[in-house]
Every structure is written in C-alpha cells, then in structure tokens.
Amino acid sequence: MIVLKGLRVYLGVVRLPILMYHYVRPLSQRLSANHKVLDLKDFRRQLSDLSQEHYFVSGTSVRSLTFDSPTNSRRPVWLTFDDGYLDHFQFVLPELLSHGAVGSFFIPTKAIFERTLLDVNKVHILLSANITAAQLIEHMREMYETNSGEVATGSSFNELRSTYGVANSLNDPDTRFIKTMLQQALPNEIRQLIIRKLFDEHIQREESAFVDEMYMTPDQVKQLHGYGMNIGSHGHEHSRFEYMSIESQRNEMEISLNYLRSLGIEDASSVMCYPHGSFNRSAKRVVSEFGCEVAVSTKAAVANLASNDTDWLELPRIDTKFFDKFMIGEFD
Ligand SMILES: [Zn+2]
Image (cartoon, rainbow, N blue to C red; front, side, top):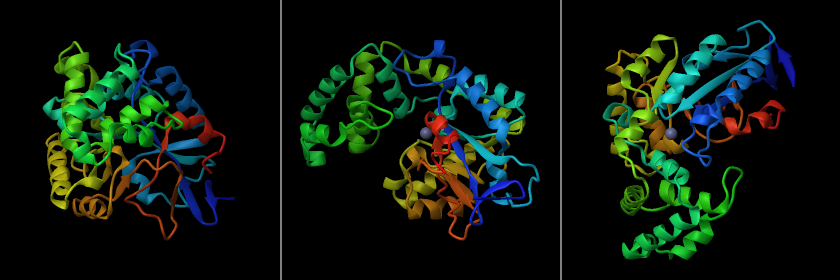
C-alpha cells in the first residue's frame, strides 16, 4: 500500500469503504429484544471513529473522487441508509449534521408514498413478536403444505429446511431459515400469502400503525434532501430486480423516480441501491437508462475506484454490523 496525495491507494486503486445502515435507534426503542438495530450511541461512536481518519462523501460525488482531492491525510467513506426508516430522519440526520457528515438515503417509494408495510419489515416484526421461531416455522409448514408449496417449488418443507436453515454470521439457523423463505426462496404468490397470514394471526396491531412508526413521510425525505443529503431510489416495491422482467425493472425505476422527483429531488436518478442487493445485467442496463451513474449492492467488500475494471453499477458495501472488523482492516 502507498499513500498518494492523502488517499489510501493500492497499486493505483482508490479504496472507498461504503457502509450500509438499516435501523439506527436507541436500544430502548426496539420493537423487542429480538429486533436487530444499531444502538444510537454506537452510531455516534462510529461517526466519531470515522471522523478521525475519514471524510464523508455523498453518492453524487463518488464518481468525481480523484487522487487530488482533498489533499489532507484522511480517506473517503460513504455512508448509506436503506429503506426510508423514520430512524434516519429522527436519529441519523441530527448526528450527521453535528459531525459535518453527509450520506445517501435509499427510499422504497411504495412504503413511503403509499404508506404500506414492506414484506421485509413484516418479517422483522414477526421475528420481534412474542412468538418463538420454532412456532413460526411450524405455522409456515402448515401453510406450505395446505397451499401445495411442494408443487410450486419441487421441494418438501423439510428439504427446504435443511437447505436454508443454516446459520450465518448474522443469524441463527431458525432465523436464517425464516428470513430466507419469506424474503427470497419461496415463489412470490405463496410467499406473500404466508407472510400475510402469519402477520394477521400473530400481530395484534394494525399495519398502518407500524407504517407511521417505521417510515419517514415524503415531507421528511424532502427535508433530508434540503439538508444536503443525497436521496436515491431503492425501487418502488422493494422487490428483487434479479427475478423481474426488464419491463418490471423499468416500471420499478419509473414509478420510484417519479415519486422522488415529485418532491423536487431532480438528481434522484443519479445514485440507486438495489433492494436486497439483487441485480442482474438487465437491471444494470435499466438503471443506467434512467440516468443512474452509481449503484450499490450488498456484496461485502471495500470498493475499488479508479481502476479500469471498476463497475460503478455494482459497488460493494460493508454492513455496519461488521464495523469493528472494517476498522481493524479486515476488508482491506
Ligand atoms: Zn432494503
């Protein structure tokens, strides 16, 4: 590694860590002890730690980062916040402002503008509810079997259980199984049906009450932008681009950008974030047709910029859950 005019450069490549955040709130405001959030005080600590060695860049300036700017010894870092959570307005914005920092906020427009709860958030709420993972799984099994799940997927429930019920660095086997089944593995129709039934049966509260607690309002998104924050699309329905037709991909971009532009955010198309980090070649083509210059995924790595093979439409990000590993250089 050599340091050239202040940037950390590896054989001519500028390294840009892009950090990914979801819920950021005081622990006391979690839905329950099972609700995975970044504690606000840890977020503050992260900002202070980052300020020592880094300067904060926004998505709109990433493409113009050069070896010459700035000339201090600090390195760039890009903070990104997904899903339009109210946390970002209520807790993140004041901290960013007080640290002189900026960030990018990726908005799933259906949730924010049409006030509906995203499936991904219904699953978080279910996992935070007063029901065990084992009970949820048994209920899923029942519905899978009564709704001919095996015909739809070609696999029995037990087969899926052994395929997807494997722990990873973030989840125990049961949680991983529930998340994978309900966010990804099951075909859309049965997946949505199971989520809806689980939610109706186990959550004794109106969806609209969660919506107001969970997400920013359009006006708050507009205010974030007014404070100099970068706002980008996170799709309309927060669905996986990888599994959509090119027409649906275009539709997702068009609807979400129209909503964001209706707030006066003219540069809404320049930076985007694929929901669930899911994209393919046609998704990249579509986002660039809409004027997108930078798109981020969820591949865990530090981005290499200024290298000939930099793919600006699939930059990797590091989940803040791995912040400490990132700080000790594990992603270098
Ligand atoms: Zn998301």
